[in-house]
Amino acid sequence: MSNDKEMTINERYKYLRKMQKRYLKAQEKERSKLLDEMQEITGYHRKSLLRLIDSKIARKQRQRQRGRTYGVEVVYALQVIAESFDYPCAERLHHNLVWMVKHLQSHGELELSSILIHQLEKISVSTIRRILKRLGRDKPSLPRKNPKDANRHRQDVPTRRIPWNEQIPGHFEADLVHHCGPSASGQYIHTLQMIDAATGWSERVAILGRSYLVMQDAFQRILSRLPFPVLEIHPDNGGEFFNAHLINFWQDNIKGVELSRSRPYFKNDNCFVEQKNASEIRAYIGHDRLDTVNQTNMLNQLYDKLWIYYNLFQPVMRISDKIMVPTKDGVHRIRRRYDDAKTPFDRLSATDKLDPVEHRCLKQLRKDTNPRKLRSDIYRLIDRLHRLPNATEKRNEDVYETLFEVPESMKGEDVSVTLSNDRTIYAG
Image 1 (cartoon, rainbow, N blue to C red):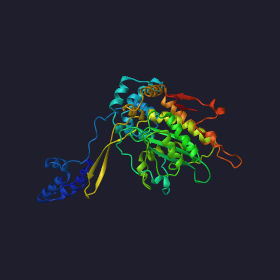
Image 2 (image 1 turned 30 degrees about the vertical axis):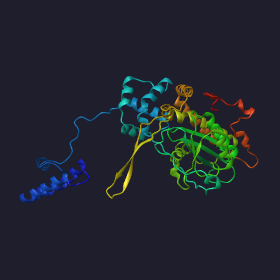
Image 3 (image 1 turned 180 degrees about the vertical axis):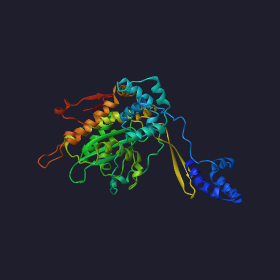
Image 4 (image 1 turned 60 degrees about the horizontal axis):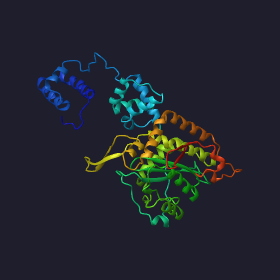
């Protein structure tokens, strides 16, 4: 065929039906030329064209219609698994179906059979995608915010990007998400988020305002439960990250930590955390204004549950290779290849950075946790969060009531899960 793009069967038949009228009216010499033309365009053999021209050109219907390969049992299992993972894409689900369906069976969410497990082992990504399309999930977009000009503290910190193929856990991108609603006036809640580039491990803390007091407290909360050491902190150019107090805090608390920052006006330098700002914060919290002590504490209870949900149960994909592919116009484009989707905990377990005691505790925590129930608890907390009233003029909010060092009067209300080395997750 001379065409670059091959014609579909329907396109060939439509073309041949038009040529059939010309062929039947033509003389013998002209018919030969028409056959040459049809042979060149369709790619069919001359004898096949003659048979088609002399008959009714139409596709024959199947004598026996093809049945469904996967029944209701598989569709329901995929629905429960997708719900437990909070509806990720088909590529992230594909390599995590079997272990999750067994995990859900241990919590009484599904009934298993050998046939179901066999079907989940052989189901393709495209079939999962078609089923997920019927479930349908809308994802909100992330609004843009403008970085500020550099200050003198930033000038001493080098600009760089954490490599996309970083293999060693501990290199964290950090960012601050604003929950100010339509107006940035007054004090309101922010979310400090840190994402490990190698494993996708995520940490989130809600703070009221962005003073040094609450920023230090948020980092202390993260360090108290992080199961592996921090090697690098890589935020954007915000002044809440780069000031004398916070730089001294990192140098005093973590010896040898590397400080780096993204280039001004280059959000892709923090691509890992920017992506998670949308999927792990905005998708749950939205863009409403949050500005009270009660909302801050409720949001931290929610983040403690998301800590378990995302790090132990949410599979993430990482780029395994980048290939430069030339195009027809001479411009090269990048083709990205991704590895199998694995949870941050599984990726971390494959390295030597996780202490054996920590590994056993986290493994037991995942075994004891029902992800479907955990997801329901998460959305229940979201509903409670949005029912809380915002700040009023007659009431002053005490930021000390939001700190990690919980006052004595509040300690009796907390339910905690102790991991090891005195690290505690406050689960509310």
